Amino acid sequence: TSPSEAGRAPDISNLSPRERADRLYDRVMRLSSEGKTDSIQFFAPMALSVYQTLGPLDADLRYDFGRVAEVAGAQQIARAQADSILASDSTHLLGLVLGIRAAQLRGDSAAARDYAKRLLAAEPSENAKGLPEYQRHQGDILEALAEARRK
Image 1 (cartoon, rainbow, N blue to C red):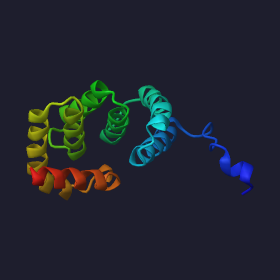
Image 2: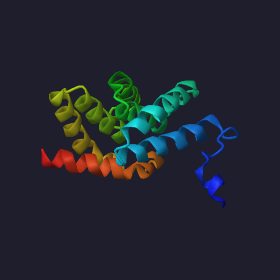
Image 3: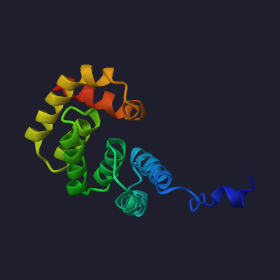
């Protein structure tokens, strides 16, 4: 790879909307972990607009959409995605994790504690399901469980 090729952004024009969403999610989450808020503010709106154009969203996509919204500070979108996941499955681990994060973002510690209790109660039976989205987001789930156990 030449230096000029290494500096260019990858061409995502031939990717499906789902692949674009996945790439943008990964980038925004990486930028968030690196504390690069200026870059998050650049890429998050792009990612949010891709999620808004996708067809029906499954729990995995809703979680990704909500996480991007969370790191961008769009707490209403994060909360709506958590609520949508939990409306379909009240014990879905990603819905509960996102519920905790959205509640913390809006400063609602009582709601965050409630979601954390629900997460701890749901974890054994939900983990036994071995859902692909649980594997994909295992780090987030484990982090939320550890935090819930400390409270």
